[in-house]
Image (cartoon, rainbow, N blue to C red; front, side, top):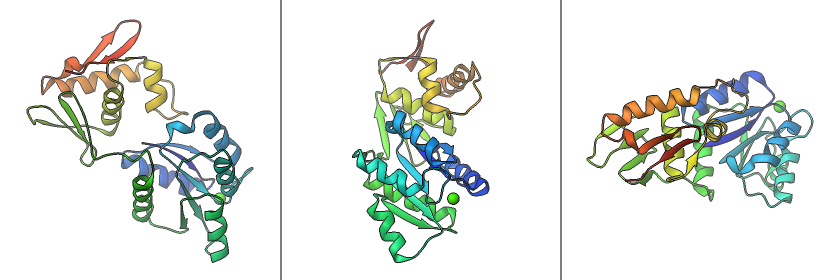
Amino acid sequence: MRVLLVEDEPDLGAAIKRTLTQHKYLVDWVIDGDEAWAYLENSWTQYTLAIFDWMLPKSSGLELCKRLRKFNNPLPVLMLTAKDSMEDKVAGLDAGADDYLVKPFGMAELLARLRALQRRSPQFKPQKLTVGNLSLDYGNNLVVSQNLQEIILTNKEFQLLEYFMKHPHQIITTEQIRNQLWEVNAEPVSNVVAAQIRLLRRKLANVGCDHVIETLHGLGYRFNVN
Ligand code: CA
């Protein structure tokens, strides 16, 4: 699940990003409203959720929200703010925010609000994704094979396998994987994708399923359902 976080306070932004990353979200963090809009305009469909701070340099979180809804964009938005008067809350919700969290807040509350937003969102994820002989268990970071052997995956392995399972029989390039699973500002390490796939295959080999990810030399990879 990819989240766009727009927060200009460095400590808070870093803390939110760290927490969400630990909980399997992939976070693109930007610090002003104009940069956020550039991301939203070009690639909002990549995101499951957005978190906007209200007070931001350039465009405010409120303006971002209004602009999204003006274009009938349904991306769920959680607004963060130091404001807590009833009028402010109404203004935020009127602008199209789905929920509202007043600073300071605890990370457990933030996570709970995000889960609630996901449940209401059309992009809500099920507890399990099953393709062929493999079943991904979102609650436990597990993949379960046909003979019910369980493999514990790291977050990145989980995201990678999920991406493959959602695109069976398709040729997927290294570039596509990198764009989808690594943050936009991540260092471009040329063989990070290949290294990650090697690790994932090694785990899948333990249950005899390493062949599901095929390497197509010069083209990319393909997930084969069996
Ligand atoms: Ca701010």
